[in-house]
Image 1 (spheres, rainbow, N blue to C red):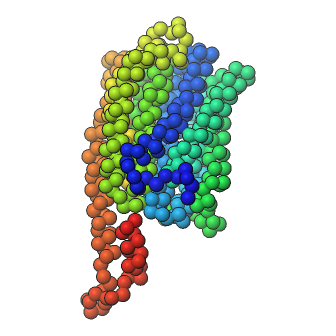
Image 2: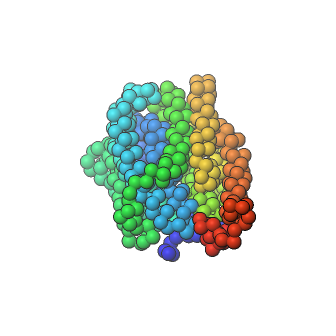
Image 3: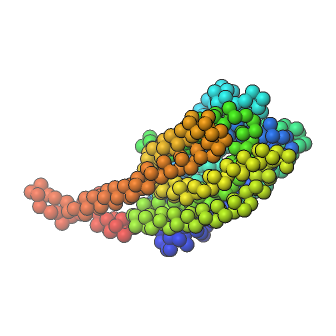
Amino acid sequence: MLKTTKDLTKGSPVRLILSFAIPMLFGMLFQQFYGMVDTMIVGRHLGVQDLAGVGATGSINFMVIGFCCGVCSGFSIPVAQCFGAGDYRGMRRFLTNSVWIALFFSLVITVLVCRFCTDILRLMRTPEDILDISRAYIYVIFLGIPATFFYNLLAGVIRSIGDSRTPVVILIGASLINIILDLFLIEAFGLGVAGAAWATVISQLLSGLACLIYLWKKVKILHPFAEEWRFDRTIALRLCRMGIPMGLQYSITAIGSVILQTSVNTLGSAAVASMTAGSRLYCFVCCPFDALGSTMATWAGQNLGARRLDRVREGVQDAALIGVGYSLLALLFVYLFGSQGVKLFLDSSETLVSEQAVQYVRIVTLFFVPLCFVNVFRFAIQGLGYSGLAVFAGLFELVGRSLAGILLVPRFGFLGACFAGPIAWLLADAFLLPAFYWCLAKTTTLLSIRDNAQALPRMNRYGQASEKASPRFSRKKLNKRTLS
């Protein structure tokens, strides 16, 4: 077994959670970093109009790319469960079938969204003065969907076996490449916002190749045999039951963002640019919540495989406390340095855009505790295998953002848009917290019933207990399973 893999079924939950989440956090920070570089270069070198053009695509970008990332996250959960149970053959079967499904999804989604790209932007009421800019950027991002699947699938598998450090190293390299490509394609070749998009796609493709090389050279237990590449309908259906709901959860959440973005678009390019700059800083500051959430998916998956549901509960509670502590620090940071942060993306002359961006990020930071709970409890539910419930959480977020876009923005303008996220998180938490403890109780009951059924003696035709153990559950295997 590799030293970089981590067994999350033994040891102190707080120590393990932090040791797993912190490397992942650095990876997410670097991911946000080269997203910030895109925005900084576009905003400072191409102007507010180009920045607004990129920002107007944010919600549709999140809806489509979020679905792809969610599906890949769902595919990695059965791998984590098999790892916790020590079932390496099962890990390989899930991996190979994930590859076939991801290949199919990536091709179909790419064709559809590229075909209707302009129609979607018009449906969102994208201002005419930035429509061409928005299309030039998002069309290239959509062309890179296969690269998105490629990287996120392999990175998810690496994390599912307890290795959160390797994806960080890969992302650092990708971030540096992205920065160089940004300057090269935008400045030297004059490709404008399309250059920033191509830089992102190429960097992600190289990240996927690096993950593949790492898995091939270092993780021998995941080298599939020839027969394990065969498509298995049963495994594929299980993967889809895990992955599609997680992808839909992101997309349903994003539909609310699309409705909100449509309302913000009616306020003009300045409001769109303000939301773009504020969202960039917000995404950077909230990275620890994403890291805690992804950690909980692996944590719950491995401990479920090891039948340690007590550790699932303990780990989720510890992660929530860690998130609450960080929320207070983030609030202090944003109120002290928020104005300087948004100026990284804007020219100093854009006073109104700067003020609105600071207003946005300060308001959402006030509600970081509910955001923390959304990530921790939602991903823990998914790690336990109840991905379908994530769809309902997404529906609550959809309702929250839609209400803000339909009711608050027309009445209060940009201020109404600032409260869309907080309303969505509060509504989602009202569902997720009781749902998690219900999932935990149900899983405990199911495992108890299964264990009792396996422990029953085999009956002969006279209704008497047989001395011979059932061939399907020998005492040796039963003891081994119980102890695991």
